[in-house]
Length: 335
Image (tube, rainbow, N blue to C red; front, side, top):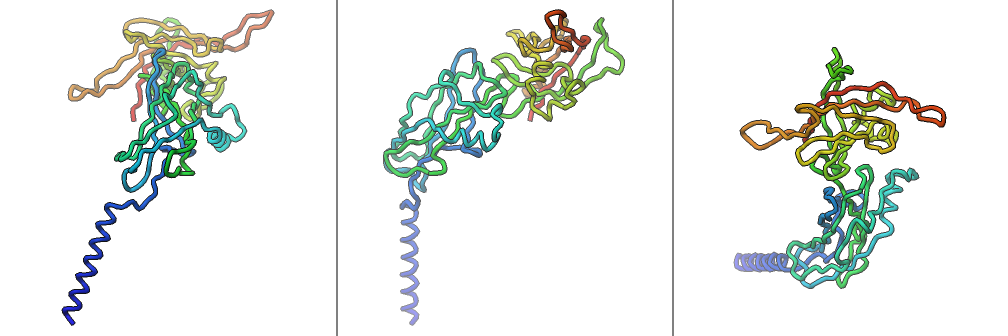
């Protein structure tokens, strides 16, 4: 009886070993092609800097899923998707078309080929596809997409939920980005006409900075709409067009880190004049200590601005509110 029992146990153990061995060498899942995305509505974001006319290369990925590397070469044929962008806009903004994400213009990007090869035995189980993007001229306030889809494949199947993708173009420069909003804390004072600090004139705010070119950012003048017409903190609400026209200013940094301050909107309703001096209207990166190389980024600014009170007419000139003199230090808030 014991002999038969031992034989049975050995037989079962042998079968189990065979099954375990087969499990490591057999494909138990289908090979499925898909567009890699990280967010809702199959969005994949990549960051592109403003670059003075020079295109920057970014990437998206096509995956080939399975428990093992695909044994055969696969050709994936891509096309421009015509469905997903509309779904994204309607789901996020309904009928408010002013907020709709935009198609990136053909003049701003190129993809070398829409026929992608996934090589046989591809251990990484995905391939990267290069996209050349020219970010210059893109607005930091708009969302831009390149909508793509898998048209067909030479073999295997395509994931019906991941066959298309919205490739999002995110702009940045050295001073601010848009993948995550960039904020600067501001501390300063208002001044009199002689440039002297007024008693009890301390001001403070947290300012949203948006990149608008390779070496320029946009902020609000002074405390912006916080103490003015709108009565809201700009940190808690995205800038509106009227706010940008009335309070938006541009800080342009040159090669020597000198800052030029100008109105953001060429035909807006703000006038601004910078007041230069030693240590004023400059950008600086200062080491936090002598132990490591971490730095804190600053703008040291002094300027005056005034906002439009009454527009000009055929019979009378424009009337402006009184000049506001500002001395402020902006410190970038890092995560």
